[in-house]
Length: 84
Image 1 (cartoon, one colour):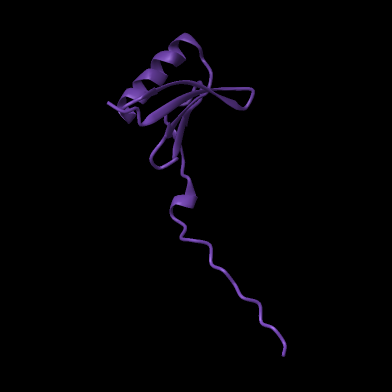
Image 2 (cartoon, rainbow, N blue to C red; image 1 turned 45 degrees about the horizontal axis):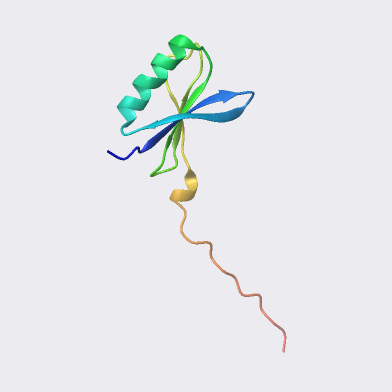
């Protein structure tokens, strides 16, 4: 099975890759196990949508970070008027 979610540990504000897993449920369970061993912030990145969820020590819920660029269409091109 292809890994669809990357797990990162956040150290000094920088993501450090831990490993990849096939499902979001597996990723969440893995992060909870990792947090039991090392209480620090972890982030899960969806390779498909580029959305992220994170869990910080002491938080009871996941924080969702949406990659809004997936909802934006192509950047419009503008032609500036010219004077003749």
